[in-house]
Amino acid sequence: MLAAASEYQHGNMVFFDVLGLFVIAYPYRVGLIINYMVITAVALYLGRKLLQPKHKSATYTKDFFCGLGITLISWFTSLVTVLIIAVFISLIGQSLSWYNHFYVSVCLYGTAAVTKIIFIHTLAKRFYYVNASDQYLGEVFFDVSLFVHCGFLTVLTYQGLCSAFISAIWVVFPLLTKLCVHKDFKRHGAGGKFIAFYLLGMFIPYLYALYLIWAVFEMFTPILGRSGSEIPPDVVLASILAGCTMTLSSYFINFIYLAKSTKRTMLTLTLVCTITFLLVCSGTFFPYSSNPASPKPKRVFLQHMTRTFHDLEGNVVKRDSGIWINAFDYTGMSHVTPHIPEINDTIRAHCEENAPLCGFPWYLPVHFLIRKNWYLPAPEVSPRDPAHFRLVSKEQTPWDSIKLTFEATGPSHMSFYVRTHKGSTLSQWSLGNGTPVTSKGGDYFVFYSHGLQASAWQFWIEVQVLEEQPEGMVTVAIAAHYFSGEDKRSSQLDALKEKFPDWTFPSAWVCTYNLFVF
Image (cartoon, rainbow, N blue to C red; front, side, top):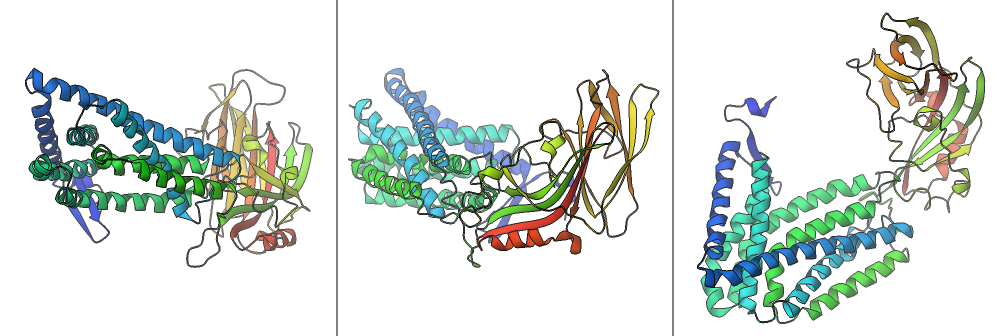
């Protein structure tokens, strides 16, 4: 295996697998030559038409650029249409209806996108290209699609991206197909022979595109089931499907102009989309499944914790305990509440405005993705191996900053959080490369892990105080996560976990959270 592909004797390599069967690889410079040859071929093909004598090319040039505009408008309006549907579905609480039934997304968003594209082009054919022949329009819109794909190829090649080979495939095969069937199309129009050869020529780019699209959805569908409470997954999926529809329909737009009527096609697609939309709105498609052959679980985090908040003098100003519940998808706990009535909106967790990351023991800094969480009151936890956190020293540096040295002991997984107060900045620390990096929202997050036997974790932070504040200069907190042993469990946590239905996947552990002000 090469540690750095660019150091290989041939430089960077273009490589891709073909339907998972074998891999094709060649040097990037060879790919660059191929791409420029393809771009040149398209330039010659289109240039011959656009640069004809004025009396011959004027109409074609005008129709070509109008066709380009109509195509872009059809794509834009199809995207807007599916986004409107996706937003409505999200607002009525039926998100992820396709999570366990992927065909639902195709029948809902895919058909809507296709219908909109056909509708826009049908209007253009009927009201704008009134006097143009079907054969002429079919050729113009094939050229428009070829121009768009060649544009993407040019941009990707200019950017030096090896993935430009995908656009090259979408240019080479359609262009060769067009050149092969051009004479037959001129003589006999869009007959059976033309359609058969056209579909055969498009087979390779469409087959490979479908393979890549399948891989994209295999990756994104599970991710959208744990993308948090702030990103509407239907909006993301609808956008991806709209993009796929634009790509896959690009070389078939010309058939809209070759067909005598698109009414039956549009009615069928509209009917499928409408029926699917009504079924989704009625809640027919449940998002989750516990089927072992194809599980689609709802992921939930349960953290039984005790929180302790200290003031500037070290006094305890607040102490509470409960089970903190985080749902990893956009539907929150709406599907769980009927099974566990105590988990409802009356116990929604409230953000501690003066604490880093809202005062909760986040295992990872994903607070900006999951803003909806629940806090079910429960007895305090008392781990056998409690975490200890103390200030070792506080000293003034020669460059007028305050250096705070801390020591922490506890379980194998701990999280450390920092928030500077007004008039203070975190200039450096002993962690990483020494330069503090904020998480989203301006707070600082540090994840610490060690083996079963480890010495105390000692580290320091340096705070630059520009203006003294009565409430102190910095707030720090440490959370101890118990992932193993007896400390991981509590009777309340086990009892709650047992109540969750089998189509959920709850991950549960015990943790403690201590906050201090300095």
